[in-house]
Image (cartoon, rainbow over all chains, first blue to last red; front, side, top):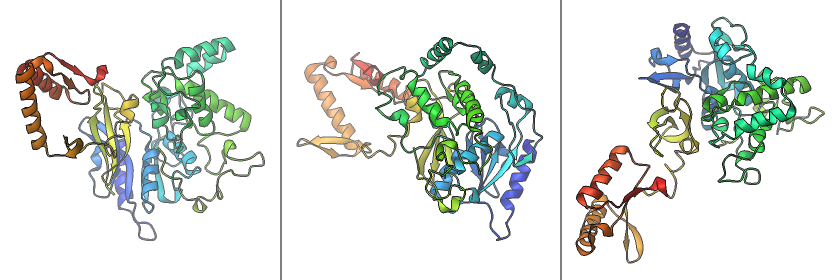
Length: 284
Length: 135
C-alpha cells in the first residue's frame, strides 16, 4: 500500500492540470531517522521517506498553509477521518476546497478495530480496499446500561484526572476558534486542578456537536487517559438521531448549530459557495 | 514555501517530552507532539503545548543586561561574564563563599545544570544551590 501511495504522490506532484498548473506540494507524513512528522513534499523530493503512520491531523496543516499562503495549491494524503475533518473545516472556511486535492487511502481492518471507526476509508479513495467498519466502543455499550447517578460518577472519576493541558483542543482539527471558551475566566477559573466538573469538558463537548468527526486524536493525545471519544461518540449519536446530522459526511450539509430553524446560515456570505467567504482569520 | 517540523525536546522540565516545532518560512506556526518517541508518546502538558510562546516574545532577553547608574543597559557576553567573575570573586573574598546562592534553571539541560552545580560547589565552595522548579 505504502509503495503505491508513494508512486501516486510522485505522479501527482509532476502532473500539470489543463491550465498548466502543478500542485505546490503534498501534505503527508515524513520519516526522519526514527521520527515521523507532518511534511509538505514537493516535486523531486525523495518519497521513500513518505509514511502513513502515526496518524496526525493533516487537515490542520493544510488549513495553516491555506490561510497563510493565499495562492498555494496542495494535495494531501488522507485517511477517512482526515477527509471527514476536511468536510467540516471547509464549510467553516478553514480550508479552501478549490486549492486542495485529496488522495485518499483505506485504513486496515486492524486500524478500524483499534479506532472503533464506523467509516475507515475516504470517499476520494485512491489506494486500498475499504475495510469493514470497526465495532462500537465497548465503553459506550456499558454506559448505556448505567443509571444517571452511575454515569455522573463515571465522568467524575474520569475528569478528575484532567491536568488541563488543553491537548484535546490543541490536537483537534475542528478546534479553531480565535477565542476559546475553555480559556474564558468566567467559565474556567485559572490556577485550579481538576477543572470545573463537568463544565470544562462539557463546554468542549457542546462545541464539538456537529463538528466531531471521530478521528480520536483527542483521546490519543490525552496524558491522563480520559476516554474522551466516549463522550463524543455519544454526542455524535445524539446529533444523528435528533438532528439528522453526521459530521464529516457531506460538504453541502449545513451544520444544525450554524443555521436558524429556517435553515438560514448564520455564517457571513453563502455557506454553499466558499468563494463568497474569505478564509477565517488565523486562530490560536 | 519552506514548511518544516523540527524535532526537539521540551525545555520546561526533566521529563524529556519530544515535540516538533512547526515553522513556515522561519516563523513558528505550531507545535506537534512527537508520536514516535517512547517517553511522551504523542502527549504533552500545557507547558509543552505552549513551549514556543516565549521564543519570539517581545519581553524575551536576547542579550545580557548590566545595571549602570540604576538603569539596565544591553551588554556583550564578554562584558557581562567579566563583570560577574570580578564581582563574585570580590564578594567571596570579602564575605566568604556562603554569602552567595546559586539558582539554576529547569529550562537548562542536565549538562548545563551539572556544570552550574560544579561552579557553585567546586569553584565557589558553597552548597547554596537550588533551582527554579522549587519556587
